[in-house]
Length: 217
View 1 (cartoon, rainbow, N blue to C red):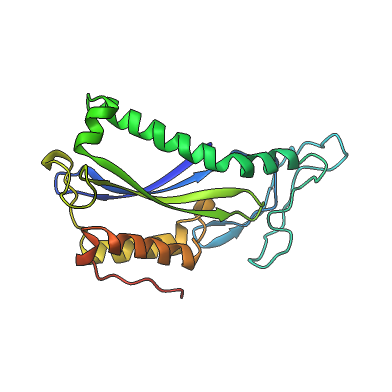
View 2: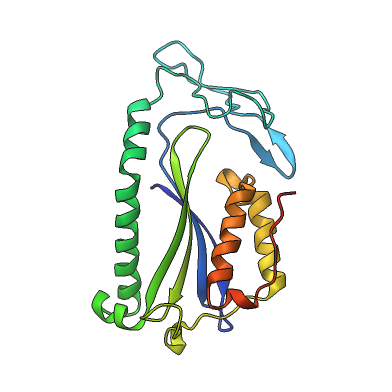
């Protein structure tokens, strides 16, 4: 995974208690996209000095695509696009996710001056993820990552990593931001994905005090 986007909840002392992350595969070829900036639709791939690919196609598109444009996700040059790489990325995504979780635990332990074994005796790093197809047909992951106690949500982790409930207003804003700019390239996130995040947060120990609701509007 080459890109990671995060949104976080915070404890009273400012340390992160939860993360919502998006893990995205690297580029395997230029595709038609819908771009927005300050509420205005931008050209797809406007390039002054656009190159011509080996197949004679100019690697540029000045169209401002609508949300239902069938070209979205299609390559600028089908002959240049790495379809084999797309298939392989989807095939190995489960292993990529497994290695990400292992690397995260090791990194977290190292940052706290602990071994992975010692960390596991104090804290459980809990994950809830959703795999979602992008328009280009490649899977990426949305995940909620939280810290629990060594035996699950109860008891909580030590005070130094104790999870703190977010205020309902902050949760509501979090959902709203996800719906409007939580997706790839700050585009909207699918309402069903946001509803899943809401379900996950309600099941956490702090979530029972959160009353924010999601909406598909």
